Image 1 (spheres, rainbow, N blue to C red):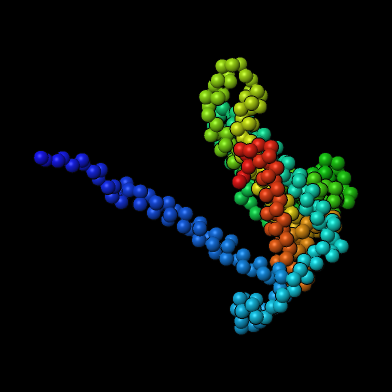
Image 2: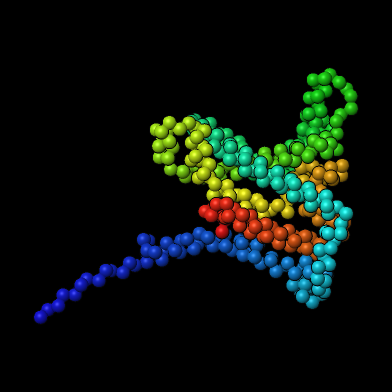
Amino acid sequence: MSLTKAKQPAKKKSGSNGSSFDNLEIFLLHLPTTIWYLIFCYAPMFGVVIAFKNYKPRPGKSFLWALLNNSKWVGFDNFKFLFKSSYFPIMLKTTILYNIVFIILGILIPVTLAILFNEIYSKKLAKTCQTMMFLPHFLSWVVVSYFVYAFLATDNGLINRAFHFVEASTGQNHNWYQDTNFWMYFLVFLNVWKGMGYSMVVYMASISGIDGELYEAALIDGASKTQQVKYITLPLLRPTISIMFIMAVGNIFRSDFGLFYQATRNSGALTSVTQTIDVYVYKALLEQSNVNLSSAAAFLQSTVGCITIVAANLIVKKIDPEAGLF
């Protein structure tokens, strides 16, 4: 009696179409990014112990040797310089209030622009506008500070010269770098101007992923553009908005050093509106050259930032269980 064996499916060889090769491609693709993060993000985390030590380098010895053998534990003494500073209430208030305004405007304006640009029929015009608004994101604050100075310089600034031309006056020029009322609002404008292009692209990418049949069905039902935005676009953008909000809240105790220091050209007259935690730490380092103070401030900001991210995520998850970051 002959038995016929069932044909076994042939094993797929690893090759150009095999899963092993595909996995290798993906592994090699993310390998440079993984190495970058390991070297520049995770390896330096060992240096957090400097915040709790009196680090003293010794000539001819490595950083690790000096940290382990030539530096005493001081506990929380390095944190006291921040809390005992007479500027602490001012810089804490400035940092938090500015970030609250940045978070609100950093969501409202990019979302509005993304929705408006998505309705532009001319693709060339839409691409041109997107490029022009995205370009400031690639400019460093040093470059931006020179552009700002060209407009606000006391002697040959474009604004002062324009005022003289219009008023036909030879009076004294206005010193913009001592006008705290002006910079209180101008700093907000600069931050929104530089960052709204990047955020707008993120929201436009989310809008492009929305199923077009939803809009077609709404159009058949007689929905206007405003109703389509209210009942389709915004609800489907909510997860992206939530993630951007949570990430922004995590930096509420940080400030953009370039914005508050470089753009204002470190004007002493603007201290009341530019003295954030990061600016204060930098100035303290210039005067005392103590890396322990900088490490303590950075550790404090990171710890508070982690707590605020978790708290913001819990609040968002309570409002909308499907919109949290984790």
